[in-house]
Length: 178
Image (cartoon, rainbow, N blue to C red; front, side, top):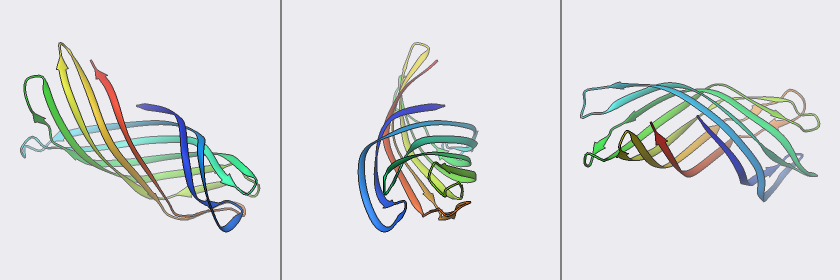
């Protein structure tokens, strides 16, 4: 499970102004994600296949002709991935992984006049590397990652429309495992 609170940048179309693009920095953004995975060893050079289900909720601000508006994006998704640990020493392990995410049920709620709920469809992916240092009965893990979500265009109940979009995220996670 992960929780994020911070600022994002937006670059793209303006709601209510077809053909106009804008770039806005410093929009509020919070996110919650949980992903339950089952890892199955394959017996092929220590590689494991990951199957899972996840939930993601993101609250942020959209851009319209007269300022910003609140929106909540929720999605349930299935995960299929692969990972392979490389044991460098007794204390160090490096584990690269790749995962594909398929949206099962997605919904975007928007607080705009004439807007409503968008039913999303699409997919995502993730590349990450766990750099694991074992100390006593704890692991310190540093994980650089890159994620992407590709969403198809969807209509909304009301007069609004949500275009195709792509979200890219690059980050670094520091965690402790007990």
